[in-house]
Each structure stands twice: as C-alpha cells, then as structure tokens.
Length: 240
Image (cartoon, rainbow, N blue to C red):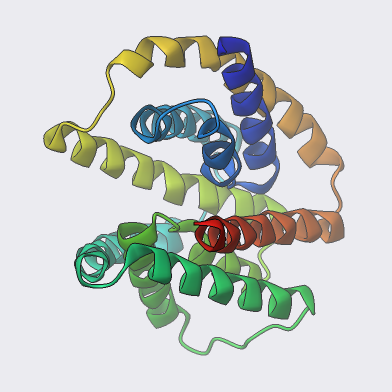
C-alpha cells in the first residue's frame, strides 16, 4: 500500500513541478481508491506544502508578489460565501456546474484566444475571490488562477513561480484552519514521511523535464491538466 501511495505522490509531484499546479488535482482522485477522504486531504496538503516550498526555492526571484499577494488575500474573502453556498445548494450540482464551466473555458483557451484585461489589478482581486469561492464550495480553487495567468501570457518561468507561491499560501492557510477545526489526520503524518522520497524524486525529474519543455508544449500540458480537472469533476458527479 505504501509503495502505491509513494508512486502516486511521485507522479503528482512530477506534474506540478512542470506546470506549477496539479498535485492535488492528479493525486486526490487516485489516492481515494486506496484511502479514506480525511487522510487523503491531510496527505495532499502536507505533500503539496513540501513540494511548493522546494519549487519556490528553485524559482526565487521569478515571481510577481504584486499579483500573488492581492489575489491570495482576495481568495480569503471568497471562501466565506463559498462555504455558505455549499450549505444551501447541493454540493454535487455545484461541482458539476463548475466542472462544466472549467471545460468550456479550457476549450476556449485551447483555441489560443486571449481576452484583453484593461484593469489587471481589479481582475486580480476578482480572480482571487472566485478562486476562494470555488475552494470553499467545491475544493477546486486552482483553475481560475491558472486560466487567468495563462490568459495574461506569462512566460513559463513566471507562470510556474507565481502559481507555486499562491498555492503555498493556500496550503498554509488550509493547515491552520484544519488545525483549529481538528480535522488534521495525525495518523497519516507518519505515513506522509514515507512519501517525501516520492516528492523529492518528482521535483527532481520535473525540473529536468521543465527545462526541456518548449512554451507551446508547456501550454498544452497545462491545458491538459485543466481538462483533467474539469473532466474528473464532471464524471465523478455523473457517476454518483
């Protein structure tokens, strides 16, 4: 069992090391075949934090704090209405609708269409709020940020550096909330130690692959992960 978990963590780390996101998107549905939801969440948050810290070190000096910090602060405002909506609207319906929306937007992005953003600072706040809202209601906080940064046509270095910092702040905030709410699965922490080699190997190989990936292929891989996220969200609810 442990070897399977390490393999999943390795593959998820490899994907995120290349694109800057995707650790939870790829790893969570795979781990749920072998573990209960509570330990999966704890394992994913801890693993993602370690991974993001490693990539942050490797991408130092390449991010834009003026974009990431306001976006993250705005996301905290979006969490509250997201959690409230989850209470009054069926979570499955919400997740299905958002999954479909993600697929539609990803299809538009795949056509290489770029939307001109005249007021980027305002857009940054809006994207942050939407990200927090989606995180609070469906746990899918990543796609709005990824699609926004892609639309701004950042180069792959800045794109990845900004994403890992945004998600690292999210990991820390999540762990704080989980600690005070008593939802951290302490039993899985020991098991998480065994996954560290998977994270390290995934980051190392991901860095090697990242250097050789062209901007065009990088965009294709990023969109593929977004499609995977939307497809998993939709199909999981349709199967239910």
